Image (tube, rainbow, N blue to C red; front, side, top):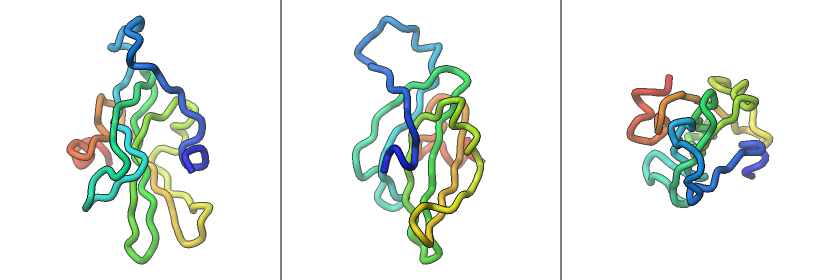
Length: 115
């Protein structure tokens, strides 16, 4: 599911301190989250080169089902930002929200930073 929804991602090893952190956008990452229960699979941080974005995908259907996936988006993937698309699963759609500040897709910051 990760490749289908998120595409190929560039992951950075945080244990290697050979790169200046100020050259990266820090984003919240969670592969399965609900508003009521929070992150169900554990959360962490991803880094993306400056000029990329943080993203939260909302996967919904008409009966009220709503889960989220949060991660980093490369420049190539940002074409999806602020779009709604039909899901490969019938009856579901995906709404993409991108933002461009450190941890702007964190659940506490989403309301203020993602439009």
